[in-house]
Length: 88
Length: 161
Image 1: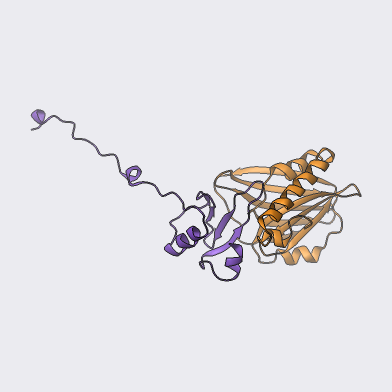
Image 2: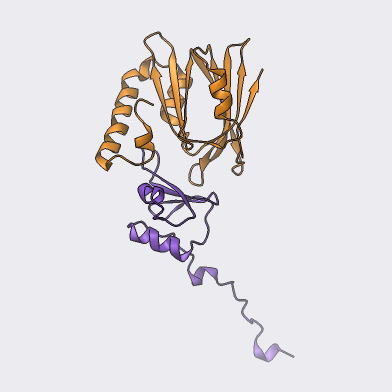
């Protein structure tokens, strides 16, 4: 993937791709300081990826970050616990 | 760099070659490990400098000492500031180091330790700007501090004490 960066075949926002080592998963560095591991976990500063970035990442067989489900995003709804017969 | 060359750091090697270099370096470290003083053992095996940013390099000719200050870590391991104080340094090229950190962001891609036949040590650092720094030293002191969030250094400054 780094060779694609050097040949301008990667999205412009990609700074470099670092290889795996004994302590590091392979990861992509973006120009805003964020970095994404191959398994889709954020190494630095998580953010929403652009469609171009997503497309390139998937094309290279890497995982996309897991986005929070809508269920998790829902605010707790306060139920109306006052019985109807007690309401004025 | 003897192990983690520019080709290794820029992913130009085949996966099998990349893994072999990492294995060879680990085997080398295992071989010399017992002979290393504790701070160098710690640096060689337990402190990950990858993606760390050097903020200051300080050289004292009178004390024959070189100090590197930087911030390191990631979301998974947490962040820390690290000071590496190299004592009894030799073959120090003042001009090379001064030009290395002149208005540049010094992000470390890889480092390696070597036990020299003269009894000293070499610590080699390879940066994202594709430049290398080699430090020859006799002893090392390490200071690590937890930092709440990564306080990135923008550029590296050089100080002559």
